Length: 427
Image (cartoon, rainbow, N blue to C red; front, top):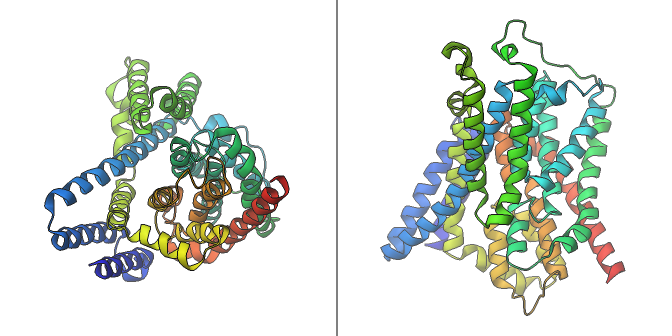
């Protein structure tokens, strides 16, 4: 059974990677892969109650991410409908692509440590659509946003799902992870930024044409500012909501979405139906990319079968017995997270290594936070940020491999060297 599951997963993954050559949408491949994997697992196991419970468990964790993604995308769409991003775009004066790349890189890096890498990617790519007209330029920026968002999320306990898991599990503490991983994360961002800014040297920013007769212009400066700061405020408050209530982040984003909906209804209540229709949450919900969300569901449920059948745990155990060295094992786990979702990989590692053997803030856990958080940048579908970018900018799998994977690997190993050297000097 395990061999069949691995073969099916590899075929589904290949179909996603070769989406454009074979002409089949990646969402269809992901859903068929998930259906086949769970069907094979259910028929082979025979224990329907066990499989049903495991599917419910996987569905619950998948739904949390999907609801969060839907909420964040809807908030961004509402801000965009009110032309709220003009609050930022009107203040960016640079005409050089290389200068803009540095600015976007560092804003993404620090913003993702406060929000999370997924939300930050959605916000920043939406912002780039307002600043850049050329598709090729936007693709390069989207690729760097993914690298910067993952690097920024790795050093903050609320910046990445895997870092949050380690934080909640007691493997890391806030100040320790920030001091330990920040230098490595900065290098992970800086090396690709240096290369990309050199490639873009001398090229000018080509802004998109400004619409002369657009419904967006019907919003007042007050409405633009209100929706921008409320939208951003809700996204920033989600980690605070989670810390205070201990409820999952999706509950915070849905609560915030309800508040934004209410404020929008009250703000536009005196307008004619035709004038306010494009500004409503209902319209924003219709505009979000459901294809990307469906793909997300398929890929997460597919990976869940590998988790429940202990294929990932077996892989971790095999690495432990074969390789032996912690730094090499964690480096490999980080690179594997470019192919398989880093959440079950970190979950398997947390189950494999006990806190009694590897106490809080030990080398293993901090290095795991860095590698699992940034290794996903190597491939476009290796992280939630990458999957979101793939949907928002229609990035081809092999375009990313050719143009961005080498840069991500450069940053990944640069950060590894910095972390190991730093750890040996300080310990």
